[in-house]
Length: 215
Image (cartoon, rainbow, N blue to C red; front, side, top):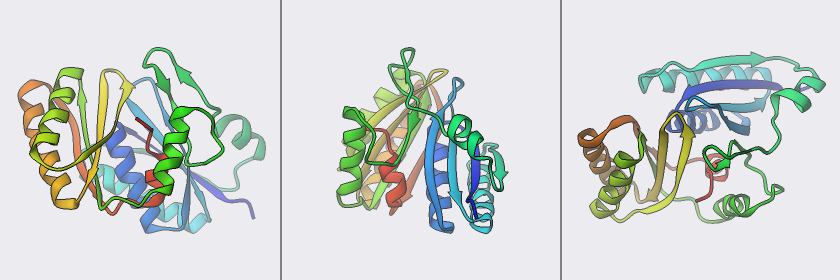
């Protein structure tokens, strides 16, 4: 029987990654793609059995709700093959506006330096935690990166532009260090600009680490 496909779209990369991590841990699903839209939002695409995808989407929507945002979810049972290959799953695409890809896949077969970085993330030991600080505007997030790195022993994995002025910095390290760094960065953002989200994912799933955009 053909797998079901689940779609969940949320404003901001941080919410989308936290939701995807929770979905991957809650049910037997595969993360297929993450695709950026032009409004600072991200659509996560997952696949699995009907029951697993349904359960995962419920978990993902609940995570978004607890983070104070509304996620739009869709559940596709027995999706048409032509719809999947030519519409639901997107080909690699580069946005000249934000100067980066807008489609991310947790696979080893993609091309390009950024994809090789993602493959390296798949192969290395999983970090105890990753932290996400998302802002609207560069000044706030750049200050947050510096503040976070000074507050604790963490490593910056990357900085992602989403369009609409949304920017996300991703850090990794021990759980206590990441929590301290995110807290410090979040406090600094409040003084300089608009905070979209700040979150810590403990023991991130391998699927999410493989999906993370490379620096």
